[in-house]
Length: 450
Image 1 (cartoon, rainbow, N blue to C red):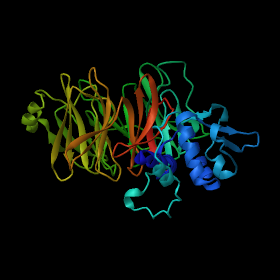
Image 2: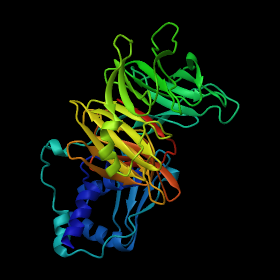
Image 3: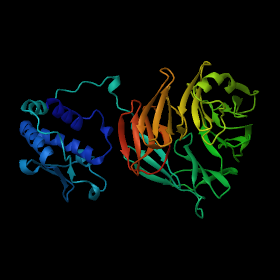
Image 4: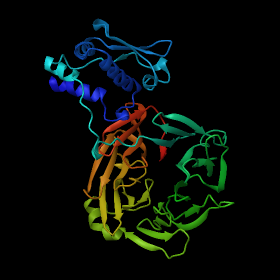
């Protein structure tokens, strides 16, 4: 019982960082319990709260002056607080804020537990490196049929203007990512049943058309100030690059095949010309293509994973090039795997079995982790990460996952998760701890610095 109350007190009021839980009423409760603690008798407050949290909800009310009134029923605990430090914890829409919180807690704690909980806190020690909070800042680009910027941590939304279309499938955002200045974004938008168009968009600005239109099957990604576009099929389609800074930007063919990815320095493109090998070519066509990986040299490992005819061309084809190396998805008649070609020449295979890679591969910025989501038949989906050093994939979250992105410093992963018929954003650290959620039903596309 002593441990129960102590944990409740420490984790419920003195969280190590502000966004341990994004629920506004939880932050509000944490803030004002601390105010009560400072302004009331600690032991009486501990007794009252321990009874109230078991038998009667704590009531939070906001008066006409904007002050917060906190009342505690049978114990009669009351306090009134105001000022910036209080308003920061109040919902933007007070009418939506729940008034009853914390319905159930374990049955009454011992007197020793109450005293321990109410003893004044010692001066906090300076946090060490492991206690530093994740960088919950920046701006997330999201959208399916529109494009919206969400500023963290407030989740203030700014809609980017896109051209008007006449209805589905026109207007679908096929790809979206931040530009080099992290103020403007690029959006590849479907403009009719057969074509898509790349636009440069920004807050309070008209969209600017970039380059000729593309087939609607193409996807686009950016890096180093360039945009790369490709599509997968049963033959090698053109891989196109565009420099948005040119006076009249045009798509330029750099190779044929799929999937394709820019190198971290945007000097090279990795791609598969035949579904069996991975090659590298210079973006400026100054060097001859160079082979990086051949699946025929992996027959034994692939067969041990139940894959006898693995290929790189599939509906789930994807490739990611980060500082640790190149990651590609493989498919073979309902079986899947991820193959890594690491810097320095080493390679590793991650068998997925029947689990389909459901969203793009994403390397961790400033780190070595690879993140992706997968969906297995008749099973819950999952968000996973893989560390080439340990060679062990780890599950960070369960559910149907879409739009896996990393924070700019690599400390957090964000994704759209659907469970029990509801969809929301989840933010997790690299250990899989849930840092927060947001009630947004749109795929996160890219995360920029503040």
